[in-house]
Image (cartoon, rainbow, N blue to C red; front, side, top):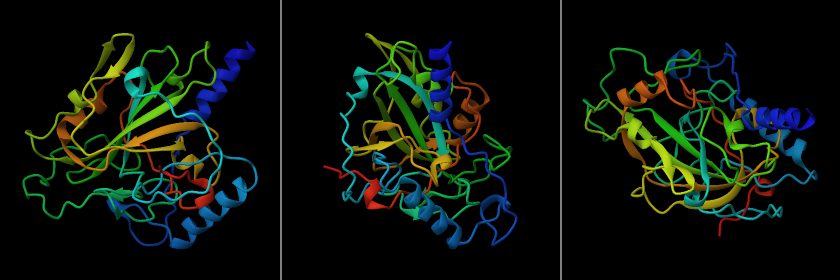
Length: 293
């Protein structure tokens, strides 16, 4: 029973969601939510620094992929190429957690707990048709829903454990391997009202390729991925360090995806994902960042 409880505890930590609540003060944010003051985010950054200082935490995520600087000295082996690992989970965040490439517009502080913050792509050149409102809510949750023009960051999570893809990052673990290597292939999309844009169902399609489960249509035409060593993300780590080591590959260019196909995916998929996750504050403390080589 001990190994089962350990695995469950690890699963819970890996899959840490942030169940945000509306603070109910400060200026209005997107979709009627309230945006907290800069001082709230600054205090979260200070607590993160305090709670990790001198404790040996490894490099953290998300980060600015356009900046290579980082002072964190905790070393770990880079995970294999994703083609030599098992896809274990796919999920997405509303707004990009990472900054850089074609997604550098700050979405605002949000509610201080991961929602309505992050980074957006520039959609000023998109057509009126692409940004036309949908007739129904897409991937609704208690926090928001997707609208044409929104940015999402999709995480294709891979593991060296022998597993099948499934719900939460706990699907990346197995009883046989308690400390698998983890890799996240990352693609940022903008959702548009255009039936000719990419199909999210196809982009998240997976199957067995040789010995491994693979997402067979991860984009390969959105720039050379920025590779770096980091951690798991999510707003649950805004004030504490993530203890999990992850190799990241973040594609710098944005791809348009048909919002209706994202909505269909949210209605039913093997990962039991039905809405966007919140984002962790961008990690700026150089002592919590690896050097991008």
